[in-house]
Length: 248
Ligand SMILES: Cc1cc2nc3c(=O)[nH]c(=O)nc-3n(C[C@H](O)[C@H](O)[C@H](O)COP(=O)(O)O)c2cc1C
Image 1 (cartoon, rainbow, N blue to C red):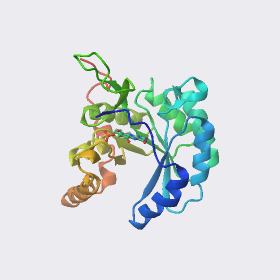
Image 2 (cartoon, protein in one colour; image 1 turned 135 degrees about the horizontal axis):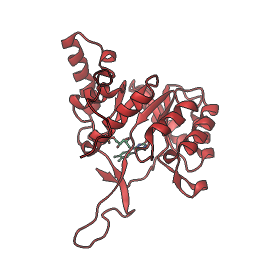
Image 3 (cartoon, helix red, strand yellow; image 1 turned 180 degrees about the vertical axis):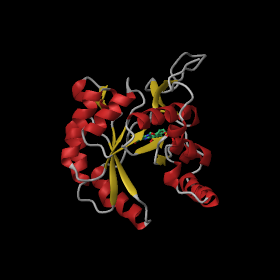
Image 4 (cartoon, helix red, strand yellow; image 1 turned 90 degrees about the vertical axis):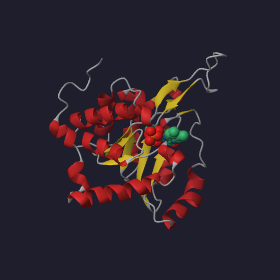
C-alpha cells in the first residue's frame, strides 16, 4: 500500500475521554502512538497521557517532520532522535517505545540513539517513502507527491532491519513491523530477533487478522511444546551464511 493519509486523529483529549474507555471496556491492551511537529508537542501529549489509567505503553512515531528544523524528520538523524527521546523520557514514567523510521540513513545508529536516551523498547519499521506516477498523465498518483509504502512488499527490508538492530543491540526488546499477514511472517520476525510484532496494512483486508495470528501462534507453540520466547532470535544464533548487506 502507498498512502499519504497523514496522521489525522481525534487529539489527545478526545482519545482520553472517548477512545481509551471504550478500548479498556473491550479488555484491550492499549499502546498510545504519539506524534508531533515539535519536541514541545510530543512532550505535551505525553504529559497529557501520563496519568491515564490502562495505558500499557507510549509509542513515539518519530517519522514526522520537525517544523523547527526545516522539516527534517525526527527519525532521520540520530542527533534529532536523541534530543526528542531524552525530552520525552524526562516527561514520562511509562514504558517508552520508540518507533524507528526505515528511511534513516543509518538505522542502527538511530536505534542506538533512541536506546541511549531512554527508549525501553524499539519498534521497527514505519513506512518507506515511495512514489507512484500515472504513466499517461505523468502526474504523481498521490496528491502529496510521495507517500508511505507498507505491506508485503516491504517485509524483506523490515526483516533485515530487525535482524541488524537485534544483532547490534541484543539487550533491547524489539517489536517487528512490516508486511505481516500470515503466521509464517510472524515467525520470520521472531527469528530475526523481534519479541513482539505489529500488524498494519493487513488489517485493511481483514480486521480480525491480529486475533487470528495470536491464536495460530499459540497453536504452533503448543504443537511443538515450545514457548514464544524460544522462537526469538533463532536466526541470530544460526547466522546469515553471509553478510546481511549482500547485494545482487
Ligand atoms: C494507513 C496507514 C496509517 C498509518 N498510521 C500510522 C500512525 O499513525 N503512526 C505510526 O507510527 N505509524 C503509522 N503507520 C505505519 C504502520 O503502523 C506500520 O509501521 C507500517 O505500515 C508497516 O507495517 P505494515 O506493512 O504491517 O503496514 C500507518 C500505516 C498505514 C498504511
